[in-house]
Image 1 (cartoon, rainbow, N blue to C red):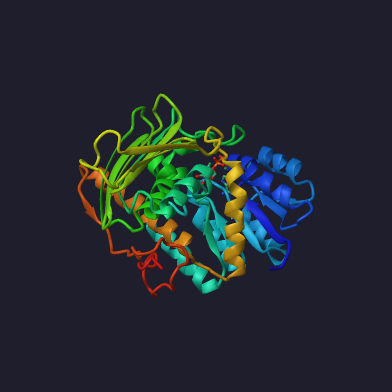
Image 2: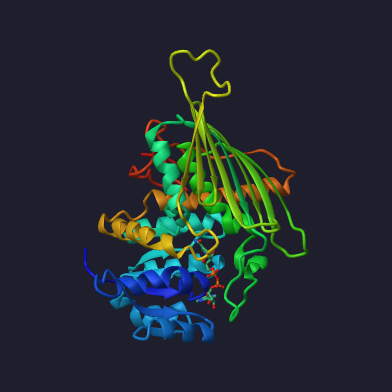
Length: 385
Ligand SMILES: NC(=O)c1ccc[n+]([C@@H]2O[C@H](COP(=O)([O-])OP(=O)(O)OC[C@H]3O[C@@H](n4cnc5c(N)ncnc54)[C@H](O)[C@@H]3O)[C@@H](O)[C@H]2O)c1
């Protein structure tokens, strides 16, 4: 692959400055895997912050002026604005023949997300979502336990994401944009739903067939701060609860198979395995469980998740190297937006069960390399291997 990749950042706020920039700055040293040459932000104070971090990069007041002046010398654009602008900036970058790394959610509605995938395919440029929770060390431990097969196929997952406030953007702009639907597209489901859903797909080794959801808004904002949903999969059930009004900041996940279970609480992992063998009189009786605890330092309290970005960026670079324009991650990002949209519909209609269009994943194998997509389907309905 050509080195370094030359990138621009659109939206130099919290995640770009705290979560992405340190990795870029590190790579801009000896290895020179990436070079940030231009940055656009509508806020003057943030343009100054960008200049302080990347003194050699040129700064622009919007993505259009950046692309007009810089596109020829660029390989990719990293989009880190509030979600409502993701689609417009992605289309502009693809129009200029650039690869796109896009923060979650990919878009604020399914139609926009599907159009982004179509455009990337047509432009033959990579569209890659920042699904960074997959790169958390503790989530990688879960993956390796599942790969070992010790708990068997997962048929039940519970996911709880507790936050004691909505995530804040940088002070210099609009720190509370997540409470403004016009900028965010929704509340905690739009903000966190993607992380919940792509982890659920991976753990269930399938895509859901129906969902029911509920949401509430405690404090008069126009975006929800509590969201819950149950997803039915061909392989089992996932129940998720997300809250910005919790008394603590924490993630708690449980995954259940026939032979055992995994419990995650931030960076602590507990594996429970049902021991079988000679002399077992009553399977599951006390004494037949083996418990194992592991700690995978994941720095959940740091909302920038800066330590996870390098591994994610390597995957983006890999997708570019393989010319994998709309890979599994992009298709799942689109599916996440479809699910969020349908979950809002379910919640608005008294938690009505909403059937989902068929999206299949090969249950015999954990999804990794994507299969070519059938043409003309929304997100690429066959999302498996
Ligand atoms: N993956 C994660 O863990 C994670 C964590 C935090 C945020 N995010 C995502 O990152 C994105 C940004 O969130 P944030 O917390 O950094 O917000 P932020 O408010 O801190 O940053 C947004 C920046 O975009 C700029 N901006 C706004 N509109 C713009 C436009 N049209 N063109 C150029 N710049 C524009 C603002 O001036 C600001 O500097 C969101 O999509 C969010 O969901 C992801």
